[in-house]
Image (cartoon, rainbow, N blue to C red; front, side, top):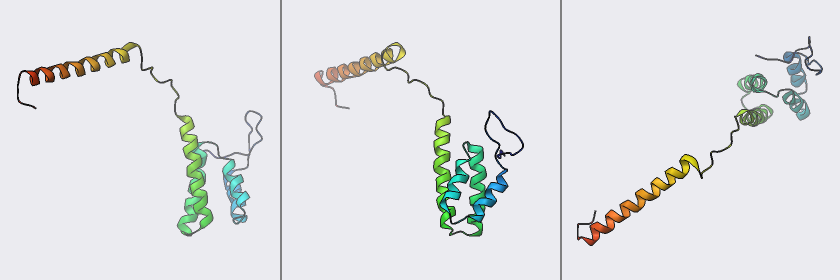
Length: 130
């Protein structure tokens, strides 16, 4: 479970205090929305958002109707959705014209025309309607 660490710095980013210290600050300022926003702003990946989600879930287990915890749970879900979607691979769509798509479209059109011709011949020769 990744948590911000205070004993090292990576890439010139100042080290962050441990997660339990951050959570204690949130609990001390529970009625302050800025404290919750600052806590969530520290988490930029799914692992970190999972940690935050567990914290708010524990609060909801203890106090099921806590509106702040419910709001933050919804915020975590939104943020996790955005992060998850950003992680999806981006590939260019296959062009519909040219190559195998063109052959497939021609084959479908030929089959459609052939079935129409068979139906028309059937009708002209006086066969029963299907």
